[in-house]
Length: 387
Image (tube, rainbow, N blue to C red; front, side):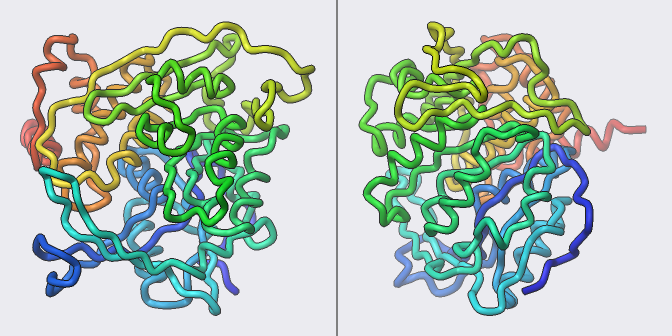
């Protein structure tokens, strides 16, 4: 086993993302997998998608994972590094392959599609506490995880639980629930996800997956009642928009300043009364009302990767200390970039462009409609106006 580009002392970065990435094969034309004659190769992975978008947006980002000692593994690392992501803590495994998957083009009317995964026994599914560079994982202002990783294996679940434990110096923990029923062989998967979400600081969850995993049907407020522990809870409501609940943190900086490894602590109990690290059991105060921001009207090309892009946009704005409404709008704008592109990854709008759109009044925001190429068109205009 080797380390790709190993370093002795990992630098502190804005965001570390840990999880499996796979080589993705996209069809060259619509149709059933049985009928599509050829595919184009690209990459996909919830956590690496977030890292790539953040790096493109100007943040320092690190992706931590394992890949096979094969051409697909080399392709993944080279492509992700090409976005400006630090891949120095990615390990190769000579005994396990890199995961791959094929998918059809989504039907715009029904969103029906086929996906064929070949990831069982992959190198990433063998990630464990004793074979991952934990120093590199924890050397970030934010550590971003998703509910996909703990579903891959018992070793991965144990690793995520260890990383999410309350501890001195723990980074701000960002967790995207990302419930994938097909990955969970353990019937207790939904309860595991609830446990992990309760221990994190910033949680992303969709109303559809909250219903599928936990039977919650009452909307964002009901989800917040189930998850009072995270300081920030982002409830995604599909094409309608997103509602975000934020609890005061005593005036402390959120997240820690660049170069700092101050912890934001875990707050999660295990299904009981939540606890703060080092404190006696106590009830949470009455939660603050949520802030709703409608999504943008977009001409959708494909929906895959949009949730990861939303998380990246929201995290980028959080790292910049922007107001809550603007953080949500940056999430919507970054998601819109991916929704109007065919693959899992799309270049986000430039920071200046996103800032201008996020600052629009409510009426102007509601009139926006974005189609394929909208981010490139703005970038070309900016470049043309640069002396």
